[in-house]
Length: 126
Image (cartoon, rainbow, N blue to C red; front, side, top):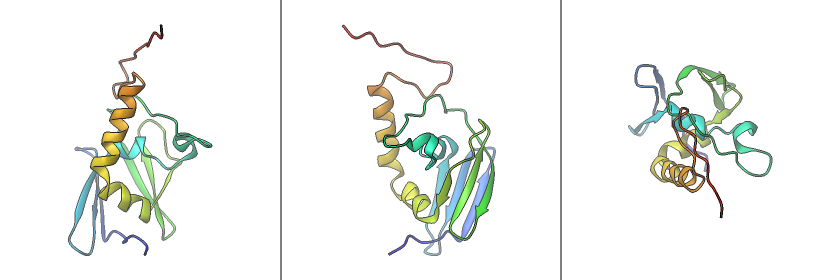
């Protein structure tokens, strides 16, 4: 069964979130950073293995555009605009936000990486 299509889509620039509302009354606020690091683009998903996105804590959404009747194109202030977020993918990002975000944070930690673009870490392997 396909995921529901949002009945309300609102970009909140001040809080840097995308609000998705559904016919059943559910509503989700997805932070721009979360959407950026979870982009379905080849730049992020890679060609076979995902590429860890770092330093995106300050990223903002500057625009949203419909992509046919099946997706949104999100435009970020770091220049990223190549991912098409299907209704199914957006719904999964919304309903699985806690688990996906924790997995992302765990991966950053395991790689000695940071959400902050002004922080870089070097790991020495003995």
